[in-house]
Length: 166
Image (cartoon, rainbow, N blue to C red; front, side, top):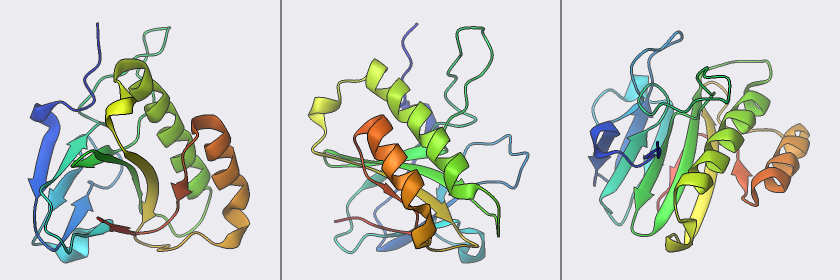
Protein backbone atom coordinates (compact mmCIF):
# COMPACT_ATOMS: atom_id res chain seq x y z
CA UNK A 1 0.00 0.00 0.00
CA UNK A 2 1.48 3.41 -0.94
CA UNK A 3 2.55 5.77 1.82
CA UNK A 4 1.46 9.40 1.52
CA UNK A 5 4.00 11.50 3.41
CA UNK A 6 2.07 14.63 2.37
CA UNK A 7 -1.23 13.52 3.92
CA UNK A 8 -3.53 16.56 4.34
CA UNK A 9 -4.94 14.93 7.50
CA UNK A 10 -1.49 15.34 9.06
CA UNK A 11 -0.99 18.99 8.04
CA UNK A 12 -0.90 22.29 9.88
CA UNK A 13 0.00 25.53 8.15
CA UNK A 14 0.98 29.16 8.66
CA UNK A 15 1.83 32.23 6.61
CA UNK A 16 3.05 34.20 9.66
CA UNK A 17 6.40 35.97 9.49
CA UNK A 18 7.59 33.78 12.38
CA UNK A 19 6.18 30.59 13.83
CA UNK A 20 7.34 27.52 15.68
CA UNK A 21 7.19 23.78 15.30
CA UNK A 22 6.30 21.90 18.48
CA UNK A 23 6.31 18.31 19.62
CA UNK A 24 5.17 16.81 22.90
CA UNK A 25 7.90 15.61 25.27
CA UNK A 26 8.84 11.92 25.02
CA UNK A 27 7.14 9.58 24.89
CA UNK A 28 5.12 11.65 22.42
CA UNK A 29 1.98 10.09 21.02
CA UNK A 30 0.64 13.12 19.15
CA UNK A 31 2.10 14.42 15.87
CA UNK A 32 4.31 17.52 15.77
CA UNK A 33 2.58 20.72 14.65
CA UNK A 34 2.93 24.40 13.75
CA UNK A 35 2.29 26.83 16.59
CA UNK A 36 2.04 30.62 16.42
CA UNK A 37 1.29 31.53 20.06
CA UNK A 38 3.22 29.46 22.61
CA UNK A 39 6.79 30.60 21.94
CA UNK A 40 8.29 28.75 24.96
CA UNK A 41 7.09 25.46 23.43
CA UNK A 42 8.76 26.04 20.05
CA UNK A 43 11.52 23.53 19.32
CA UNK A 44 12.24 24.87 15.82
CA UNK A 45 11.72 28.50 14.84
CA UNK A 46 10.67 29.23 11.27
CA UNK A 47 11.43 32.67 9.80
CA UNK A 48 9.06 33.36 6.92
CA UNK A 49 9.69 37.00 5.88
CA UNK A 50 7.84 36.67 2.55
CA UNK A 51 4.84 35.16 4.35
CA UNK A 52 4.70 32.05 2.18
CA UNK A 53 1.84 29.68 2.94
CA UNK A 54 3.93 26.97 4.61
CA UNK A 55 2.48 23.56 5.39
CA UNK A 56 3.95 21.22 7.95
CA UNK A 57 3.09 17.59 7.34
CA UNK A 58 3.60 15.55 10.50
CA UNK A 59 5.16 12.17 9.81
CA UNK A 60 6.03 10.67 13.20
CA UNK A 61 2.83 9.67 15.03
CA UNK A 62 0.78 10.34 11.88
CA UNK A 63 2.17 8.41 8.89
CA UNK A 64 2.77 4.70 9.37
CA UNK A 65 5.95 3.32 7.81
CA UNK A 66 6.57 -0.38 8.40
CA UNK A 67 9.79 -2.37 8.32
CA UNK A 68 9.84 -5.66 6.42
CA UNK A 69 9.18 -7.51 9.70
CA UNK A 70 5.97 -5.49 10.23
CA UNK A 71 7.28 -3.31 13.05
CA UNK A 72 7.00 0.48 12.85
CA UNK A 73 10.00 2.20 11.25
CA UNK A 74 11.70 5.18 12.86
CA UNK A 75 10.67 8.46 11.20
CA UNK A 76 11.47 12.15 11.44
CA UNK A 77 8.88 14.49 12.94
CA UNK A 78 7.72 16.00 9.66
CA UNK A 79 8.32 17.98 6.52
CA UNK A 80 7.72 21.64 5.70
CA UNK A 81 6.42 22.31 2.20
CA UNK A 82 5.98 25.57 0.34
CA UNK A 83 6.09 26.36 -3.34
CA UNK A 84 8.19 23.50 -4.76
CA UNK A 85 10.44 23.14 -1.70
CA UNK A 86 10.66 20.52 1.04
CA UNK A 87 12.36 20.80 4.40
CA UNK A 88 12.49 17.60 6.44
CA UNK A 89 12.59 18.31 10.18
CA UNK A 90 13.56 16.26 13.20
CA UNK A 91 12.89 17.96 16.54
CA UNK A 92 15.09 17.34 19.58
CA UNK A 93 15.10 18.79 23.07
CA UNK A 94 18.34 17.44 24.53
CA UNK A 95 21.32 19.05 26.24
CA UNK A 96 23.78 16.30 25.44
CA UNK A 97 24.13 12.89 23.91
CA UNK A 98 23.94 11.79 20.34
CA UNK A 99 21.02 14.04 19.36
CA UNK A 100 22.39 14.99 15.95
CA UNK A 101 23.36 11.40 15.09
CA UNK A 102 19.94 10.06 16.12
CA UNK A 103 18.23 12.86 14.17
CA UNK A 104 20.39 12.15 11.11
CA UNK A 105 19.39 8.50 11.22
CA UNK A 106 15.67 9.33 11.50
CA UNK A 107 15.89 11.83 8.62
CA UNK A 108 17.81 9.37 6.42
CA UNK A 109 15.21 6.65 6.90
CA UNK A 110 12.34 9.07 6.24
CA UNK A 111 13.89 10.64 3.15
CA UNK A 112 14.76 7.29 1.61
CA UNK A 113 11.18 6.08 2.20
CA UNK A 114 9.82 9.37 0.84
CA UNK A 115 11.87 8.98 -2.34
CA UNK A 116 10.51 5.44 -2.76
CA UNK A 117 6.92 6.74 -2.58
CA UNK A 118 7.02 10.21 -4.21
CA UNK A 119 8.43 11.76 -7.37
CA UNK A 120 11.04 14.13 -5.93
CA UNK A 121 11.82 15.68 -9.32
CA UNK A 122 8.79 17.97 -8.80
CA UNK A 123 10.67 19.69 -5.95
CA UNK A 124 13.31 22.31 -6.75
CA UNK A 125 14.96 22.22 -3.33
CA UNK A 126 15.10 19.62 -0.57
CA UNK A 127 16.73 20.33 2.79
CA UNK A 128 16.93 18.59 6.15
CA UNK A 129 17.22 20.00 9.68
CA UNK A 130 17.75 18.53 13.10
CA UNK A 131 16.45 21.32 15.35
CA UNK A 132 17.30 21.25 19.04
CA UNK A 133 15.93 24.03 21.25
CA UNK A 134 18.54 23.24 23.93
CA UNK A 135 21.47 23.18 21.49
CA UNK A 136 20.58 25.77 18.82
CA UNK A 137 23.64 25.04 16.64
CA UNK A 138 25.53 21.83 15.98
CA UNK A 139 29.23 22.35 16.66
CA UNK A 140 32.04 21.60 14.24
CA UNK A 141 32.56 18.14 15.76
CA UNK A 142 29.40 17.05 13.96
CA UNK A 143 30.99 17.20 10.50
CA UNK A 144 31.04 13.39 10.32
CA UNK A 145 27.26 13.21 10.76
CA UNK A 146 26.73 15.87 8.11
CA UNK A 147 29.03 14.07 5.65
CA UNK A 148 27.39 10.69 6.35
CA UNK A 149 23.95 12.20 5.74
CA UNK A 150 25.08 13.61 2.39
CA UNK A 151 26.50 10.21 1.41
CA UNK A 152 23.24 8.46 2.41
CA UNK A 153 20.76 10.91 0.84
CA UNK A 154 22.54 13.36 -1.46
CA UNK A 155 21.19 16.27 0.63
CA UNK A 156 22.71 18.72 3.09
CA UNK A 157 21.96 18.27 6.81
CA UNK A 158 21.71 21.35 8.99
CA UNK A 159 21.89 21.11 12.76
CA UNK A 160 20.24 24.36 13.78
CA UNK A 161 17.12 25.58 15.45
CA UNK A 162 16.21 28.40 13.05
CA UNK A 163 14.79 27.47 9.65
CA UNK A 164 14.66 30.25 7.07
CA UNK A 165 11.97 30.19 4.39
CA UNK A 166 13.51 31.85 1.33
